[in-house]
Length: 430
Ligand code: GDP
Ligand code: IMO
Ligand code: MG
Image (tube, rainbow, N blue to C red; front, side, top):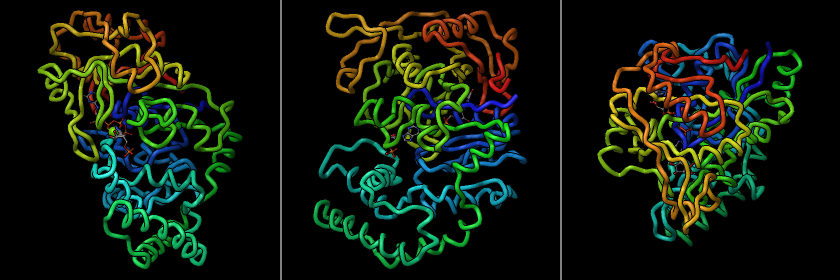
């Protein structure tokens, strides 16, 4: 059966999207990244070997799958080259399996400098970005002064547009932030040096996906970051600069919403967040440290420690609505194995009122007090379990309660980092 499925993060990122996408790729002919850039870090563990993908879609390790980087993604040619080289060194035939849209916006070295200058805190409070130039690249895209992948193959146009962009960036860098300018000639030469390698894999991704739809091929749209980091619907300003919610799969690829069959929300059995911003169920205590240690909660790209806390059903209800979730993929259940008792936030208390749905606005969310329900732990090893029937009754009861609280069925339960460590309750690809 041909299915087109969006897999998104439904919290603040790092839910295990890469693992779920890789696991489902066996069933999809195409895997597509539609937003974000190399701020993402998607970890795949296959037979004990770890691969961390930043920009390249998580289907790249499967023969017979075409991976697409669609229009909505911001692309650093140097980051892409580095990631490609790492995979090619392991004999992954990237050129055969990867296509990139000529319409992707470019991340320039000056975007990285601007990101760093802002994050230095000299002029404004730091947000805790990944420092990859993501925000400034999206700003230029929306301001219509950005460069695109297609410009790499038209040197005179590239030089012209780069001059205009760098003129502006360098003015801001030197005059406003009082840091060093970025060299025009160096940037131009570096960009043009990537053109040859990119040319054969650059295409009209939207048209390629149209062909896939017409041929009845299954497609997996792989989200990056998480719904609560969405530029319009997340905890602004503590967000990333793209639409991370499922609707972004349409805007970022040009595949209309009517072509999408299902949306799977990947969610940890608890919650993490990296960088600044409100996090009502955060446990800045021994519990948080236990989750961080058992869950190895350090950024897969930046290595930063992730903040940890309990599952938040109020936040998930908002996310489920924003994404139109068909089902959940619950990950890292095994991380809770040792806990005697597990808390779940079922709503908030705010100004004497009870809320079941996370409120809009980071400031408002920051004032919310979680209302918790305590569930008994199972205190036995669930790592690597592949059958629902093999889970301890309390673990099953915990999962049932999450599904009930979010009013969304669970398709997949992940019980370890490896590709095969999972229970498939319902195969989303049918
Ligand atoms: P992504 O950005 O959503 O793809 O997630 P990351 O790869 O950044 O972070 C998820 C981390 O959890 C990675 O280190 C994965 O290998 C690991 N992981 C994924 N699923 C599970 C699971 O079910 N159990 C455990 N223990 N680790 C998992
Ligand atoms: P994956 O795809 C978790 C966070 C950053 C920061 C904010 C803005 O691996 O889940 P940015 O560099 O995007 O301007 O940073 O967003 N952030 C992520 N957090 N997982 C990610 O990606 C993230 N990508 C960005 O920490 O708070
Ligand atoms: Mg990640």
